[in-house]
Length: 145
Image (cartoon, rainbow, N blue to C red; front, top):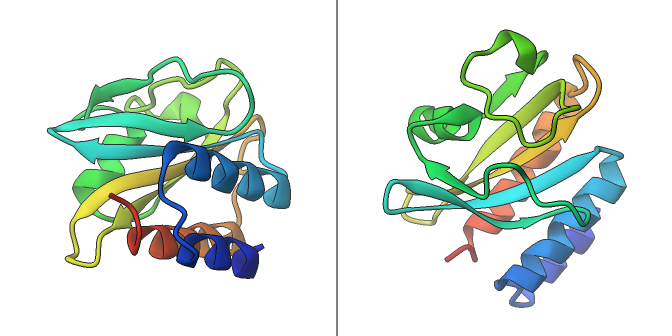
């Protein structure tokens, strides 16, 4: 999946339709319930694309809120094994129990967005899942505008 995704990104994937295709590829390959990409600009995070047909509850929110905002602030991957125990969690879907958020860094080392995945299972994300999403975020950082 990483090779296919890398080739897709390097071929010039950039717009919302391309990001939609990327999140669908990731979601299908990893078997997660939902994957989304948010763009960071003007102190806000706004959804670029999410897997599936249902939009998240929060399509746009201040960068100071949520697990996505915490990942932007820390500039590090954030894994929450049980979102019910983290007051920072902004619900995307009512059935989410765990989430992973990875900052997308530009070539100039600025956080330009985040990629997030959610599961309806507690403790859903492994070390391998984290490594995969961090590689994907690295690839996206080269083309994310």
